Image 1 (cartoon, rainbow, N blue to C red):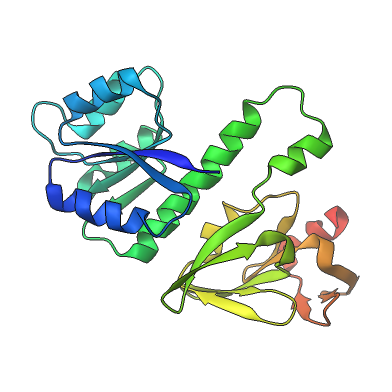
Image 2 (tube, rainbow, N blue to C red):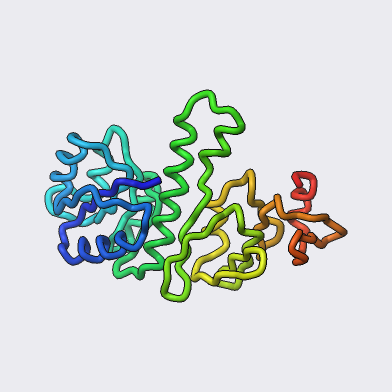
Length: 238
């Protein structure tokens, strides 16, 4: 699944940075570039776009005023050097707010968040789905930045995710990948039918549960996870 992206920013350097980052994210496709919000209005009238990377302070028409003119708003990630517009931006339903200058890992986090929302919208727009067809539409892969590489991970092979402050260990059967993200950022992306939070520091793939004893969850690979007291209702779900 790929998202067609439009960059709207009056700074050429901002275009260069976003294009360079997009080249390392396989599910993002550059569909066009505009240096004024007024140009973007014309662009959107001619072809559909899935995601806009949008600056705020631009001549004639600001990024936020531009959003207010759109009858149907694509997904939007704000990229601005001014943090004071963040609250107003989220009131306009943007996916994320990138404060310039931003690093690739922060860009990737925003892109993954947009992909999760895009996938949910696609599912909601598909009528009369059976349980089998719904599960087929759930994302089965994600991309994780680790050790200066972008690694594709099959979510069906992930046993659990473990929080380590601002890092997360993504555990498969015998190995883990360490990435500079928070557990909450993964929770908003992962399917609730498969992955469930069982502790403030753990998200579990429920299909790999062997048995639960007291406050301990035993997995099929021999690992043991704690069951947090605020998550005991999960036992009934499992």
